[in-house]
Image 1 (spheres, one colour):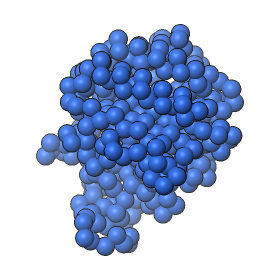
Image 2 (cartoon, helix red, strand yellow):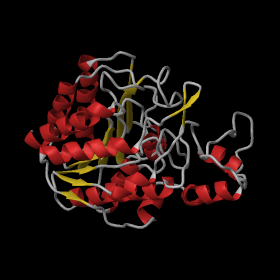
Image 3 (cartoon, one colour):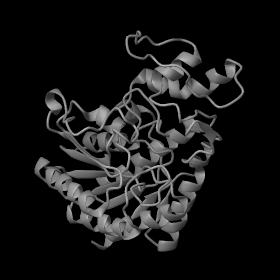
Length: 342
């Protein structure tokens, strides 16, 4: 399996995350990509390549142009305002307030942010751009006939919606890749999100469409981020009715119910007639993850890779979450190696 990886992930090196009422060292940090890369190399999974530049056209196929423009200028606007720290939103267009795009950076941050934990830093935009190119380059391999490819993306992307960032995500790498596969000729594409946290951004982007099936296995939003999307009765809208399937599971869920949800999702994807499968590969369902609530063991990620291989589809793996740094690399390799051997 070829891995696509860019050293530009290092450009996003945030110093602050609002967590539990404190500003802490971010859970999503450069060492996540470093350890995954080391384990991929040590496991000898295959060639590691740099991404190529795709420009913004594929990004604009799934994201609002005004939002993308904001991301490209946010750090400059923050500095022009004379602020010294990292950019964190402080106000939002909440219920019964007008949904009007302001001009000042304070207002823009709140207009485009869905959460406050994700500080915007000097390197956030170029790192996000590189991460999207990683996903697109891996998608190009799959579109070209490869059985699989691994997009070692950082920052992650599945919380980034049509016109919102948050949850450590700025551009939705999995959605950008899925749309690219569609644009290159795949009639139907499925996105399966196995991150502990619901892929709200991916759902938002494809919710009214019948050509991309979205399924997500995640912590029940009654107790888990992002809290305001990911319930079981969200099944799509308009032409997309029936093409979204959520599996919100209770805190403490282990392998039994988790794999029952996975099997159901894969069966629905098969009946959908997907020609390609994009996996939002979050590894934070792991039992020791510090900001999650499931109880999968390291061996369960091997089982996951084998089950995904049984689907028999060209498969693109896109790295999302996973915050037990010591276990992240091994769990990632467990999935990818089992898929390759399946």
